[in-house]
Length: 366
Image (cartoon, rainbow, N blue to C red; front, side):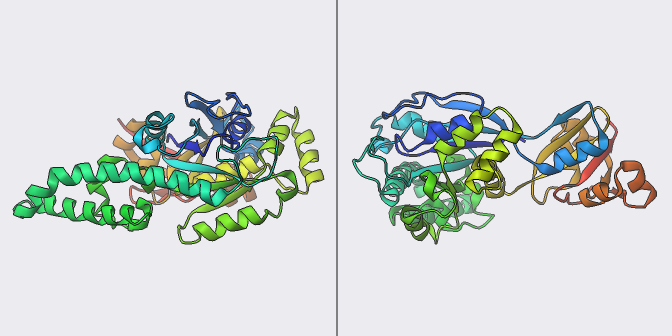
């Protein structure tokens, strides 16, 4: 399952430094605005301790983690919704992403220029929110004009529902809130789906702090927490510069030693990727054999045939049954054969909802 997260923020807040930590692709990181002109795209592996644990028991030829695509998008400025700066390009790039990682500068450093002259992450957040909301409002109003006459006649019930949903969305956006705040019902979402609204996407606020604030945060972070408390958004505190140092270390042992010295249990980028999973309501199942142990990404609540289709669409079409072992049972007993002998291997049908960490084999016929 393709997952694409867009890293956004004002110019010079640490987006490209963070991107460099996340990906092998290297974005230019420089102390001036717009150093990233075109979006840089990197594919990164999702850290999952369970995958390595399974591999210890199975001893496969290959270990294949699941991946996430990260897009480093050019910095935004006031007026972007009207095409200022790189506005139109920025907004087009973000429209293609599944989720938004909104980087906010939460550190003081006179040597790093701020595009607005002072550090104020709440103001920075509101600048970007406003630009995205204005662009969404423009899209909604355009569609309203198409449906207004048809809806007022009242003969086309679908047109009336579309029109009413759009009016609800317009009211929310005009009040200075993001589309997420409209709280649309499941049956209303299809009426705005084609608009690919920017502010309906799930968002995580990434507070980029100095090294001293890596564990506890600071006053800037607390101000951000207060400003987003009603959004239902995730907040992650990270030190992009320190993450860059960790990423540059050669070995796992060196990285663990560095983390220990800083009093941290794992790199912040690992937490970021895990948060992104949570943000998109995703989970993982595994396939385990001598050739490979592999992680697969699915949406929570997905049934077995659709989960099989993540491997290949033919698996969905010809799905017969799934052989399922719970992850903890596999680790406790040590092998598929032991699980089978102990009665811990289950045969599940088309209605089975896949659980996070399931180890699965699919029976299919095409």
